[in-house]
Image 1: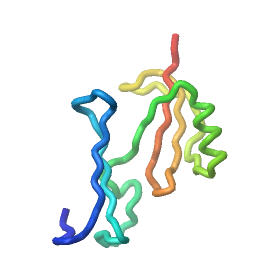
Image 2 (image 1 turned 90 degrees about the vertical axis):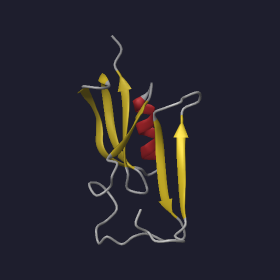
Image 3 (image 1 turned 90 degrees about the horizontal axis):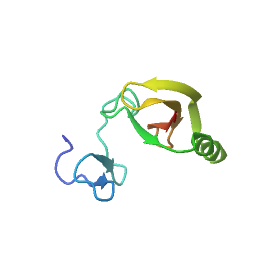
Length: 108
């Protein structure tokens, strides 16, 4: 990673219960250690652009996000995604400046 020896960080691999592939990797420097690249560590200067989570009730997720002060970058809107299909989506900004897309599949 180019950090040099002894720089502490947390590394987490998350798998859905029973999954043997397709996971999320999280890496976070501890104790304020990080590499100063001179560029803010946020979109588009991160290796991963966004996390997408599917829900059965996007309106409830949106309501809770707003109630907890989460910034809404894009309101709920109709989408037709080549991978996820037709549905509704909104884009949130997490407290650590990561884009979080919420998607609800349209049935019918």
